[in-house]
Image (tube, rainbow, N blue to C red; front, side, top):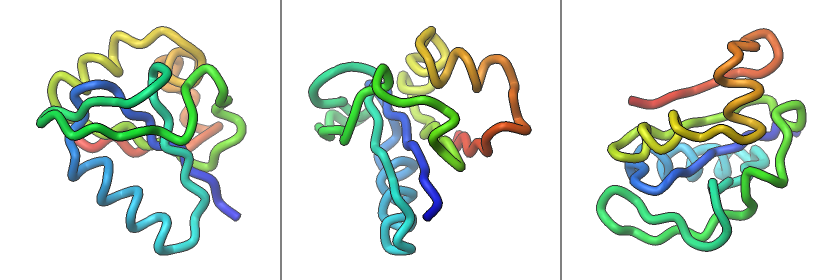
Length: 104
């Protein structure tokens, strides 16, 4: 079964995250909603979301696709992230290892 990580940073755009999560789950794709920190993630309009896991617990190699929802200041917070999945994979441009979807 395909596996997708949707990485949420504080300030993410609600529709860009939740619509993707909904559609993928309806298609019976395994989705790991992943926060940058423990506890709830606050969207751009203060909607509170409790992720399934945190970024320190995931590896890019475990996923077929990584989704980075946009929004402000969510995009800036994702860009500032220096840990595991985002730093080692997204910023190093290993496009052949995993598929990416950044909604802006």
